[in-house]
Image 1 (cartoon, one colour):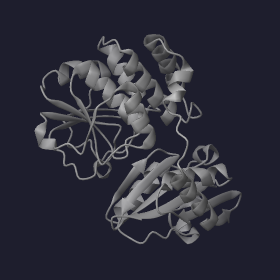
Image 2 (tube, helix red, strand yellow):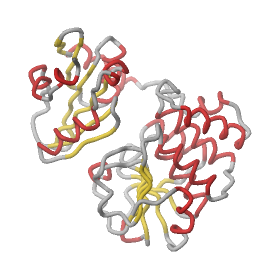
Image 3 (spheres, rainbow, N blue to C red):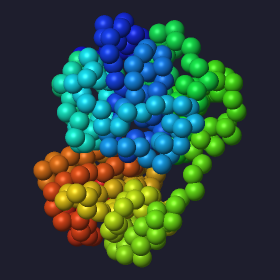
Length: 313
């Protein structure tokens, strides 16, 4: 059942024991959003598998106590936050749940008791509207967590909308802190293992030119998303980086703003490919991934099969 932000408070009040659950490798948008909802309406914050480094930094900064791999049966209701597909929840099996998310995948909609899903630039923007529409004033920590989520998911406002900027302004005023403090909650120097993984992926990269478009593919043992982003920074229009994890393949994809404006939608593409290989995938139009069965060997020949050429014309 689709609900509005204003309806969230009355519906969530029907449940006594609520968990706000983040996706695996939970990022600042997920952590900040789940924390704000738990503080405003009561409940606990959980995450599948663990937190990203920036997610952990934010949780420490705002004092969020995050339960890792909580048992679903212990809760009257689970509100899945910033998560679009079952695969992102690892081993956690859902029964009674709601959804608050800004992705456009439909994987979790059918079984949800209720959901709020619209194409905002971050889930934090949706959560901020939930708080406002239900008359809930944020604490300093809640406002900080939501602002950091917006900053993170918009790439420090490079992909921001008018709603993003308005929400950021309101959160700065509500929280009584300055922008630099929010940036400090995201500031983590990459550790040496991440730097090595990114550099190795760059050295292994294969490049295909399709007209004026450059498509890069590579492999990494970890940090596939960071490696794909680095290939975009180095000049690729689209980048795929694959790795193997626990017997399955994970491929992260990134694209330039130019490619997105030309019509490329990595969210749709990665979802289709993942399901074709006994898995699933999704994300954003410019940043997505999938997890599936198969061999982690993306090649430029695969790019043609994935219809990149028809997308980038």
